[in-house]
Length: 112
Image (cartoon, rainbow, N blue to C red; front, side):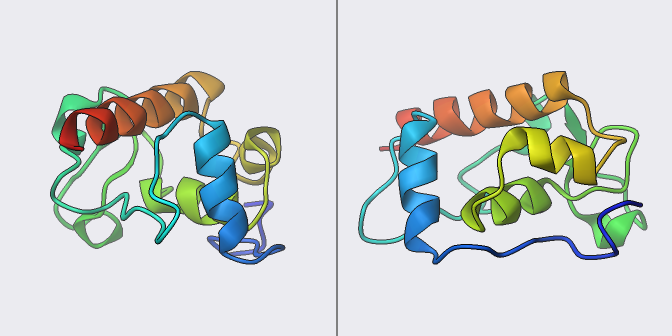
């Protein structure tokens, strides 16, 4: 993979995650970044991801890849753009990323 084996490329402080997520319309708290892998997000309802026992330790991954969903949020937190993420993880499609961000946004909006 072209991302050098790293799941996240940190570039900016965690506060940038709050701003980036807010800019994406995720309605996050300014006090702490959301936990995108918490039980309150029901990833089973998102068609862009899958969880298979034994595949990446059972983590939620982008469908037909081994890229964990959390890698997207870690990279966004680190200041990466969606375009950069897609370049670093070529198996993930823009449609999948958009679906994951929309699912997170809808889930967070209904949980607050």
